Image 1 (cartoon, helix red, strand yellow):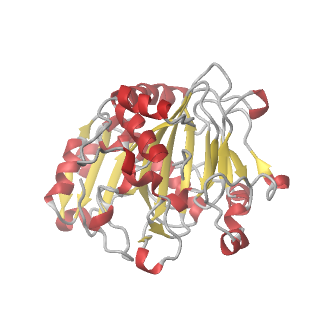
Image 2 (image 1 turned 90 degrees about the horizontal axis):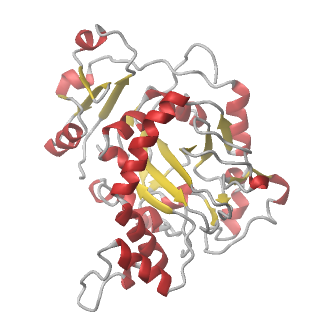
Image 3 (image 1 turned 180 degrees about the vertical axis):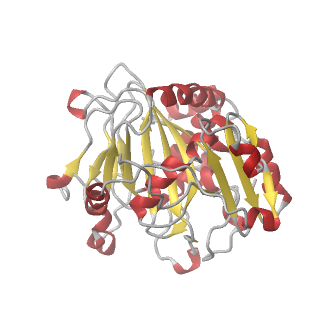
Length: 383
């Protein structure tokens, strides 16, 4: 979830997504009545709607409905407990780094599917950039017919308007790729997210892939919750580089955070902090922070309201990163009729397939915003 420049869907009462890692004994699957799919043990319990089942099966998940799904009593694989000082740092600063969260082997198995998904969806990435930079009105002709139908047409339109892109982005590969789904819906990320937010359960809001090419511009200051359709404070994003990222002083393009900005109530009360082009460097001059060099397997986490940006990529190397955003279970959908500040719709592509099926102001319970992981799990050891 981030900002460029210019400014399936099913409803259900409950969704439970269960994953156990590949290393579990073979007896566990038959014992719990699970089937091995795509290298993991999956189970999805849904309360209603055949389309939810269709979505699940398309990802290779087994669907269990009714009382069996609700009363399965399943638990999740243990995940490491975060040290108390890490959780307190997140509360205070709005961001942390978890070094070595993923192993070299795990990153190697993730890289291929992510890169292939990005190649397969290249047109989506360019079209999304064109929509954000040029506006919806410039994507159709006078008869409402699309003007941009190929990657080349998108590139030509952006170049004709002199647009400098900060990155290319695609959303929600988990809905199409079982390998990505296995990772983003698994217990480890969800457990960390729940601990940082101080909640018992979290839902997967979205995943995003960001490609920052050599020569791409800076990512402007923004906060993720201003682009999300939720009325909540409980959202956290995990940012995972798939390429080595040098420290910023060495030309790296990792995120810059305005520490404590998620607690800066005066900013939103007295001004409109999300207007295009605003620079918050002076306001937060003494508390700008980054997490130095990052290797594949490291991750940074930031609160949904914390302001962040990234520098331009002046290096000869690309930077591919995967982000995964989680929202607390029970978070409600924004009710636009009662809100005075408009949402930044840059990420509309991510949620437009389901948002109209949840009543405004209601808790978001939807197959495309699945309940994941195991909440506050206490594992052995610490991150």
